[in-house]
Image 1: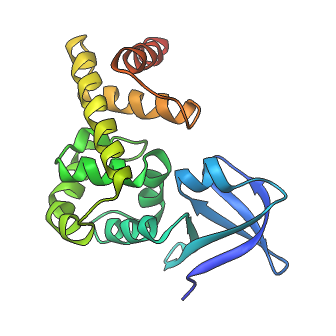
Image 2: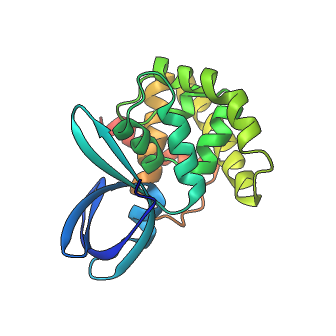
Image 3: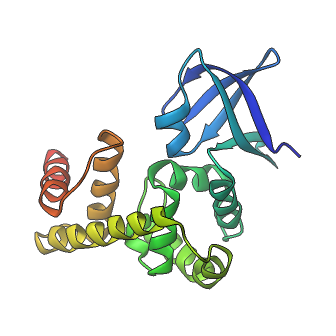
Length: 202
């Protein structure tokens, strides 16, 4: 089993990086924290990893820490959740945001590209009690994640009040945050205006 990878970053794509590991160029599908914070072309990178073997072939997934990988492994246990879709969720949302959303049973906040409402509801249903036990005692970052989810819920409510559906509102918020700088501090007003602007463009 591959538990970790270490190598030089050859390239950074929208959903993956390529690592030079002992002369092999390995494509690794990575989480948000790795993609936006640690992966710099030309620099060495060490990450936690998981190798998935399926009918489609081999896929490598990379994580910043063991907590991300543990959540990824739990997502894989949900029916119809494959590796690519699980890593997509972790690429658009922080670990603590996902845990807070599942803990609150808020499927709308898991609305990322490729993940429909029914599948998001299944994630909440199947993992809520399980994750509450496994990830008990969230660190302080979990508080920030919970606050972020509460902010998102408020903005979703505002957008649905303007006539947009819950799913497209949640998706607009996710895309707005993904396109912004990682250290952006959102308020209800700023997030609402940015998400509304994105929805109006569409």
